[in-house]
Image (cartoon, rainbow, N blue to C red; front, side, top):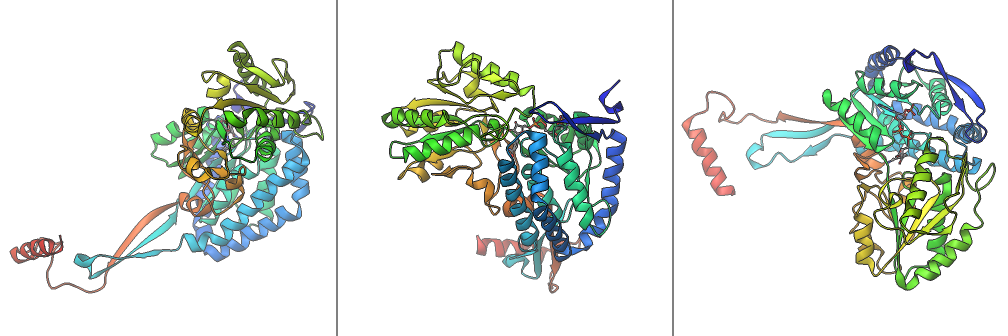
Amino acid sequence: MTTTALIDFPSHNPATGEEIGRYRNYTAEEVAAAVDRAHASSQAWQALGFSGRKKILVAWNAVLTKRLTELAELVALETGKPLSDATLEISLAIGHLDWASKNASKYLAPVSRNPGLIMANMKARVERAPYGVVGVIGPWNYPVFTPMGSIAYSLAAGNTVVFKPSEYTPGVGAWLGSTFAEVAPFADIFQVVTGLAATGAALTGAAVDKIAFTGSTRTAKKVAASAADRMIPTVLECGGKDPVIIDRDANIKKAAEYALWLAMSNAGQTCIGAERVYVHQAIADEFIREIGAMAKEIHPGVNKNYGPATMPSQLNVIQSHIDDAAAKGAKFLIGGVDSVQPPYVQPTIMLDVPEDSLAITEETFGPTLTINRVADMDEAIRLANATRYGLGASVWSKRNGEKIASKLVTGMVSINSVIGFAGIASVPFGGVKDSGYGRIHGPEGLHEFTYLRSVVSERFALPIAFTTFKRTKFADKFITGVMKFLH
Ligand code: NDP
């Protein structure tokens, strides 16, 4: 039996393994039908205009806000994360939905352009038109915040959306779909198609006009290949190997406290989580002492600092990275080769980890952190950039933060802070290299879900014809003369 033949599939509580719900496993035909329906409702959604759409999105946000705890409980149940983390995640998503709905008219309004001297008889403007139907594919680690970066901005820009949530968080996806339906003026503006990987593949092969994918780099490449076949544009938000760079003039205690949270929270399952620290050798011992003492107080479990690995197979990846680092001579400040205790992973901090270790070169996606000493910030920057990923970074220095940040090959940097860029709705979110391309959030996130249309029109007719077969020798001479005069 193929997976698409399954009518439904279970969602589990990753902490207990208990089945907590069953969801429809949408077939390729059902996905195609959903996309067709999204096309059918697209014109009406566009016709509502910015203010009409804003009313609906603000109403949806009010439902999310009112029922925040209910949604947070569902997120906590399906991902295993603490309720407090789920609440923070949803709060950030609410901020983005609010920003997108209220700023779309400003950033997507037509812009007049100067036609230039030689075309002075024309007027010109640039419009931004919605693509039509956007297919959104999301991961399980932040099942509300992450897809909302595409859903909210796509809808605000005038697209209809078909959303495929991760098979680990189908209940959260279904909840978002049903609450939108409560405020929708008509059907099929925002649809959710639950299912396994084949459902996501079906969405990338359906008649969508743009694909917004968040997930692993491996799957992103498959999505991009499928889209390239039909010249469908994509925005790809993929994995990371984010560095934390700590200079000798940093506030060491604060850097340790924040780096620890950035590495361990959400069980390390954060695309912009800390995976590597490069610390100036002059303060390395003190930093290691501080972070080691703080890490002893961090524990996984139900109602503890972080939950289980949401996706059981990730435990094998985490174990292999720890084993590889140990075999290559890394020392353990906290944890060790026995850190993986399914479904949990104990906090694990490795020191002096060879740069060719998997824990340095591949995304671990677990509550682990490597700490390596550097002679100076040039070395820190070189090592931070020596990765195939380029998502986010955190820099700690009283005086050199801006200088270090400007040399990092990443889409986002937080100075003397962590992940600030995810919470500020007005700045774009995304990466370079294997971390993907395109941007969600901010004006650029709205632009991402529109295409450009240049519209020019004649203001007054010229006595000389240039763009007809009636062009004369005089016209040629005139053009040459004007060009010589101008240039
Ligand atoms: P996956 O790539 O495994 O899955 C992402 C989504 O794609 C899921 O909905 C999945 O469905 C679906 N999918 C799987 N195969 C295909 C396919 N062939 N075609 C289309 N869709 C498919 O990633 P994870 O869910 O494991 O998410 C974790 C990854 O996401 C990490 O690498 C993390 O760094 C990254 N991430 C990046 C973020 C960013 O903004 N840059 C934010 C959050 C996470 P199913 O679950 O049913 O297999």
